[in-house]
Length: 265
Ligand SMILES: O=P(O)(O)OC[C@H]1O[C@H](O[C@H]2O[C@H](CO)[C@@H](O)[C@H](O)[C@H]2O)[C@H](O)[C@@H](O)[C@@H]1O
Image (cartoon, rainbow, N blue to C red):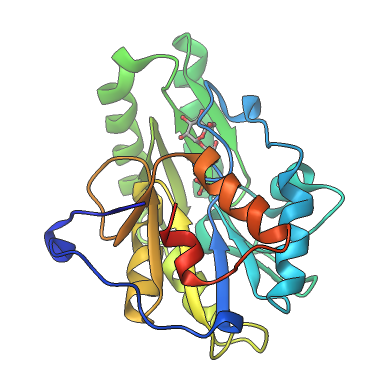
């Protein structure tokens, strides 16, 4: 793994000291556990990974969570038959120990915005609307020439909705997300809960949506790891989801599970 370069992390960072048993592991999904695919429903998770995550969760006494822009139900479908602690919808939805706080119903303003997004998608081949109820995404990966127009639409819709929602950019996507939700906030909250408290967090992500998660683990003295290229405040990098799978499968198979395990790849 290489050291990441960023404005705030230009110097190489030594890994923080850590006890073997004291890790809390947070994993993003798209671009991290699975390769980016042409459209949201095309992703495939290596079938060895769910079982490996379950084994790791046991080794970590439960301190393992998925932190994603996807709904928790989607993550469950991907990792079946296992269900993990999860922060879905960029932190708007949290399930801990099987318990999930109820989500507020989406607002009428979000419905209005969703209809505008659907009209835009119907008029433009390759544009996809992903309606996750409390959060709605507009994808242009299959219509890259429409990126500027799609983003302008999303900026306008976010402004029309007002302060209850914020615009979250991602890889060939922009989403309307509840304004109070963030991956960093979700990780910080989980770190205060019994299974996680007192451990050193590791967060692996790949995207602009993961940056405040990286910042949260940096603040907590943990390990931030970005998959792939791009400016980041993560302090370390891995090349690909496959490189992460190697680490997870090796650790699940009884290999080392320390901060160094993540840094030696
Ligand atoms: O937080 P994540 O787990 O990384 O989720 C972020 C968004 O990922 C998905 O979109 C991205 O992946 C798609 C499948 O590879 C790809 O087609 C798309 O271009 C990417 O932006 C997902 O569809 C979104 O709901 C997530 O918020």
